[in-house]
Image 1 (cartoon, one colour):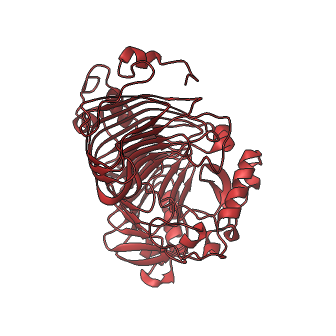
Image 2 (cartoon, rainbow, N blue to C red):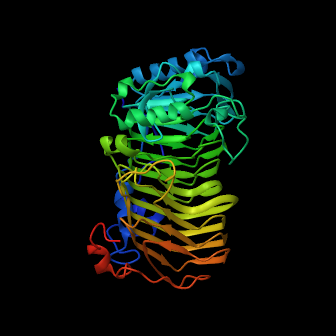
Image 3 (cartoon, rainbow, N blue to C red):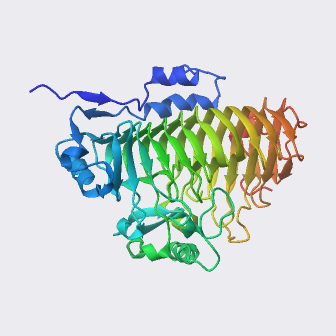
Length: 494
């Protein structure tokens, strides 16, 4: 029997394709023999192209109607399970309006939403039980199942030009957050129950090493589920779909590897509606996406406090490029959950064209989080506005809520060819006396209009040709000196 045909996705990248996209020759110098960007082709080469069997399972053949009224969860799940049992292929959602509860994604299965197809998720929180193993703000627990969930799966995808609609909004999921001043109205009012008691309880469970199986969160606890979560998966593609109205984080690969998020549109302006959240994941590509969010557009995380140190898995080798960010706290945020460490992040060729962004990049942590953040590189970014600061590094984040003796460290950050029309400040860095921020290099940038001067505390920063602000001199050695950067000052020096 002839081998089955395959649907070839655009995920993954051979060295030659990676070289064309990055402007680097495989193994070549690009911006110089010591350029950190030389690492990008190798990262992309570890994200394989995904191919699926040429076998389609239409959800309508399993009984789905697409009439916007019938509960289609069982029919769609039957198609996903049958496709997996047959060795893989595509589960196709034809044009229509499909009301559903949570769905479990499977290995070797591509859930494909045709143009004109909408999966609309019910807002009854009891439908997202029984709880599943998940990570909620950096702490593992048994929580409400994400709308689209995969655990321990490999080689799986969500593709197409259709829409995923979480139906969250004022009085539907968003009010669980409690007081929230940013983004769209949530529907919460004083005296109404919210997530805060359960959130504190979850943090206590993590700090006391309660076994994860005993950290059970129910619907009454009001800890909102994620929209898409890939938990301990390998080989993941999310391509082309539009995602609207999420309860909380939108695309959340956690403890996963070889992930591509490409060409999606995220329009979700509720509380904690971070657009894409690579969490303790490795080899991640986020490209050609559009984000209009109520929180950070892309937020890179690696576990929180003691529980993050227990899991002890960094987020690393992450490439973000060609994206358009319209609204959110930060275009790219690193933290505040950084306890497992974050390293080798590359951001390039992004356009930030909305009035609602606070930062181009923000690195945040505190002495309860700890963690090492290093080798963070940005280039060729154009921003209309960054209301608070274009570049902010804050190691005193949320210090009024929690402190400890786990000093976070940030080093080796480059910002090149970044232009911003208006910002509160160009550079705002708040390091710690116990751990200065080291090796920040700002080169060939243009911050056209700033409301206030740069603010530097316990930081080493240097610049060359920074329009709009004077050159910044390093306070400890010269972080622009490659030899000094390689060796670095002793840990703990102020």
